[in-house]
Image 1: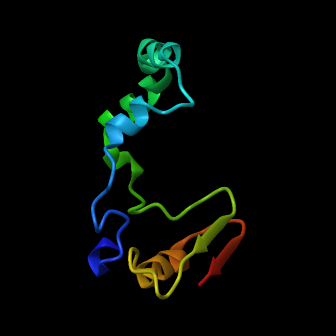
Image 2: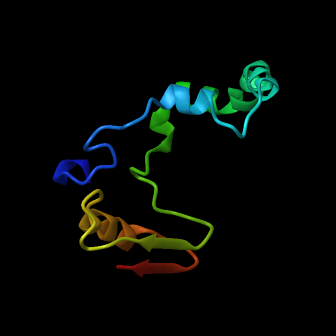
Length: 101
C-alpha cells in the first residue's frame, strides 16, 4: 500500500512511539522491569530464529506435503503475484488441495 500512497504512516505520526509505550497507563514500572529481566527468556527463541539461516524457509523445489494444502490469493493482490502462486499450486502434491482466488 505504501507504493500507492495509502500506507499507515504516509502522513507521519502525531505521537512519539517510545513515549507512548513508556507512559502507557496499562503498565507499571514493575511490568517494565519484569519485561527487561525476562526479555531474553521470552524472546530468545525468536531472536535465534531470525538471526539464523533464513534460506531454510524457501519453498523452491518443495512440492510434496503430507497435510492438506490451501492456497488463498486474490487476483487484485498488489503485494503478492497470484499467478506465481497458482503455478506453484499446480505443482504441489498433497492429500487435499484447495485454491481460492
